[in-house]
Image (cartoon, rainbow, N blue to C red):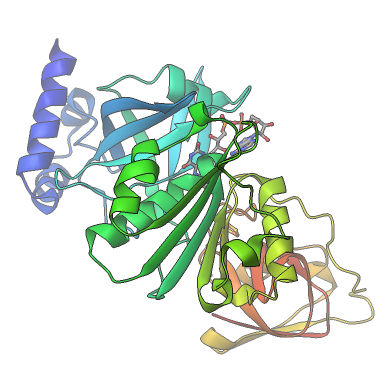
Length: 366
Ligand SMILES: Cc1cc2nc3c(=O)[nH]c(=O)nc-3n(C[C@H](O)[C@H](O)[C@H](O)COP(=O)(O)OP(=O)(O)OC[C@H]3O[C@@H](n4cnc5c(N)ncnc54)[C@H](O)[C@@H]3O)c2cc1C
Ligand code: FES
């Protein structure tokens, strides 16, 4: 009863009072009692209350969240890190954010993974009224003022694409938008209403495809038909997100179509495991790295062998942005201007957290 009342009061306050005021009041009255009594407002942590939960598709839930006063701004396409205690263990997982509503809420859409600890909890156990801990939004999978965008996604990979498209449509931006969304079956379609009705009515070119339906109306995107289905592909940017095999096939198809990989934006939901840490023998050649955008130069030693470019940069006091540190989110991405690296590279884009020096001189830029 008390919890329900507190919950109601917290939601009311966050929707009626400015977050800056709540922050001012809470930080000036931060007593042990207040923290114990209401640890949603009297806290230094970013938290959010679950305000609603809806079923999107088979095993997929959209969870609506109202964040507390520590919430800051974000860009459509970015993700948040959720920190959850499940059976006494702390788990950190990332989820793409939907655009913020007028009521100050946003949502995440979670697909249950077989044996997945956190996705099972979020899709089966989480209840309205519970609060969850978050970290601030991050990620580079966002709109960059282009004129023509093609989103290629599969399964839950639609979530960041949904966020960017919804945001651009809400802003009435005149951008040429197309999406190819692939699912296993009809029952797996996420954001069906947007894909089937809303977006086509708003001028978005939408193609939904199924890998496990025998349905002659829909085609699957392949290297062979990519340029046939999207003849003006080379004129725009491509945003790609989905399972590893799907993404690898699409990247190969784009390469075969001579697509400029500088215009390809990728987000992966699973760790990129690269065993290739380079062939350079640091006892013979100790490479130098120049971070052009920061005008910082570092000379490596044998101690740096086997370390990722991100670890090396940090060690030499160069503070670079990073997120997942597992090659998924793209936050650490820089452009290779000179030299060679091993590991996680896509065109000239180097994912510093999972790539390694592989030539005597390396130049990286923003
Ligand atoms: C930047 C980013 C954004 C993300 N956004 C979303 C989102 O909007 N919606 C969403 O549902 N998920 C999203 N994810 C994936 C999410 O963070 C979790 O990895 C996912 O929910 C599985 O967590 P789990 O604890 O249930 O699985 P775990 O217990 O960690 O893993 C269980 C098994 O599932 C496999 N697995 C884990 N994730 C996936 C996956 N995505 N596809 C296939 N196999 C997988 C693991 O390799 C393992 O074998 C995102 C990930 C990243 C890095
Ligand atoms: S890809 Fe996420 S930090 Fe490098």
